[in-house]
Image (cartoon, rainbow, N blue to C red; front, side):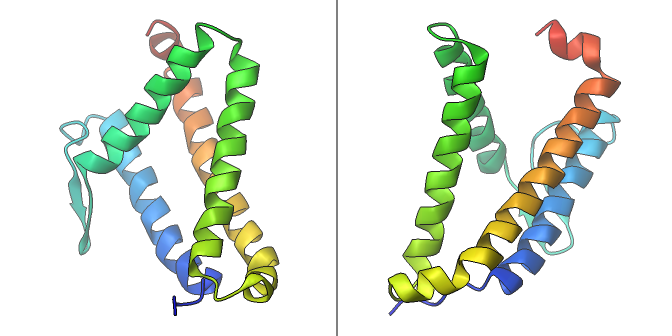
Length: 135
């Protein structure tokens, strides 16, 4: 039997992880980090593997834009994330009733995490707009 998805416990852990990501991004952006090499923050490490996965998904999206348009690719990414996150909850649920009981809490958790990450990305792009546009 798989452990139940506990959005409250995961939210606390993910909020801390999200904060480390945002802090790392701030340090990286402000020149206080030597790039995406994984930095120690309390007992956890944001690893190169984490950033490699992020960069791989972005590279795939950039490749797909070449044969489509950015709006369609963005919507495809959002759909994929939604499906994967539902799978994440399903994978830790004992049955469909258990999953249904976790729905509201899980959706709140994923939406808040996305909001924080999107807000940070907007702030980053606004601050360094020209350098991001020239990539």
